Amino acid sequence: MALSRLLSKSVNVAPAVLGIVLLAAVHQSGPIGWRGIVPLHSTRADVERLLGPGENSCKCWYYRDDFNAFFTYSTSDCEGEGSGGWDVPPNTVLSIIVRQKPQPKLSDLGLDESRFRIESTRDLMNYVDEQQGLSVEVYEGRVQSFRYFQSRTDETRRCPDDIFFASGVPKEARASLLERLNDFVESSRLQQYEKLHTMYLPQFARMWYTAEKFDELMRESVSRRQSFFEFKPRSIYKLDDSTYGEVFEILGVAKTDYNGNIVESIRATRLVLRGGQWYFVDFFRRVPAG
Image 1 (tube, rainbow, N blue to C red):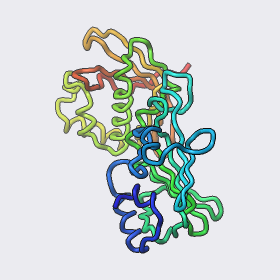
Image 2: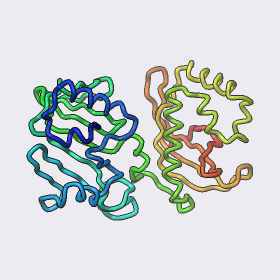
Image 3: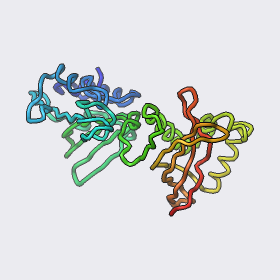
């Protein structure tokens, strides 16, 4: 039985069984969700088919004998004037809080704590799995609530409130562009240099001759203790280039680890769109501030 179904039911389940089920759920690859309701993928209509209309002014609270559940919904997408912060239609589920009755013991869940980031305030502990979108709030050994939110794979659907897109940047390709940037930074952080090599347009990458040569040069850079691990875009423009034609220039703020010291700098890079895929045709060159 999936965790999403288990936590929607009464916990009159043997502790050993409960632990096994939860362990299986937190090792699955996709978002967990609750009773088939997955944040950013399910709607108010899905919730009401399952539970009926909610209570309170928001029609989003549910009180049952074995659980209480609270839903938040979006009010618009990124182009609208509502709130929510995600590029999803109105009335999309953003998060779910479930309070089980009776409260299960944390020890009965069998959590693999290595999967979670642990936050604590005195006796209140919060176990957070950002990869799958789950947090477990615990007080004095008892689970107070389970909270379901967007998984790591859905981060590209976040509204780019602090990113300026020039009018020439196609709206339908913006999410994939940001995803490509995130993938590049993550691969750089993990030192996956062969993968980085494939993200460059072959015409541009040929200057490195082979992926092995590229790997060698990148490792030489890291050996100087200069590790580039974060890039937050600020503005994206469309430009015409004599070599590659239509290119998109991204200006943003990079964080680089210089021998243990975190240094921020303004950097720019350029990508092209070929066959629905983004490719780099520039490095993350430093741009003078001011």
